[in-house]
Length: 143
Image 1 (cartoon, rainbow, N blue to C red):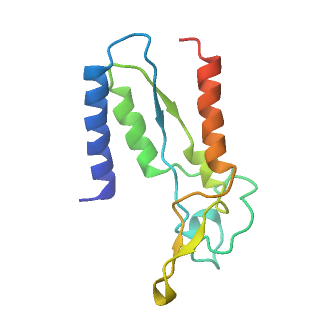
Image 2: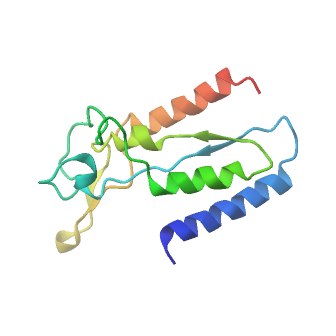
């Protein structure tokens, strides 16, 4: 099964559960958007690189004429959440995280089977920023 099809099916299962079981108006639901990977260096204008191995600095700006490219899973999240009965606050972490190609742990594996880990985060900063978005949403919310 295509991973985006599976992702949408999983999200729809989650939204049905939320709409069915969280009926109280004093409950707030947050959903964190997609955490991007950096598997393809062409996505961040590094034509000579193949992965994020050895990248030591974040991107200094957007990569596509001033726009960070939208992750395909973000469109799925927005489409599914719009159809929910219960309001959900979407924490959009994808664009800011796409700029942090340097925030991954590096390689994993042994000898010939060493591969870049371009989907997990280890450096302080990226997950901390996601938490700051949640804290700000909680603090400044009017609902």
